[in-house]
Image: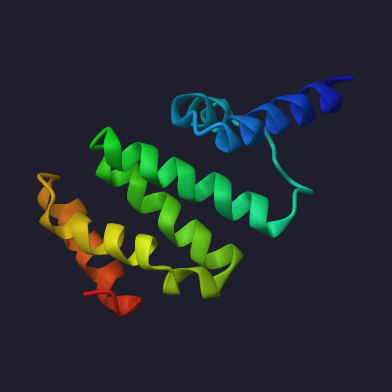
Length: 113
């Protein structure tokens, strides 16, 4: 019973991504809803939309945790221009110095800087 409820919430989060509702997607994943068993492209999309939402809300530290998750799931995704642009933007953001330093390291690691 509980597993089906989690699955339903995960599917709701993915539907929210399709509908471009970043807030709903982030809230669904922030609740710790397990999304195991979903296809890689769905997981990448979920992390990407979370990263975009955190960037829009200027939560750079949380945004920076989403980008390596994308790389772990599908390493080829770091070649996407939008991801590389976001990686280049973070070191210039008004984030704390440690976050900017980590973002700069990530951007240089994926050759986006």
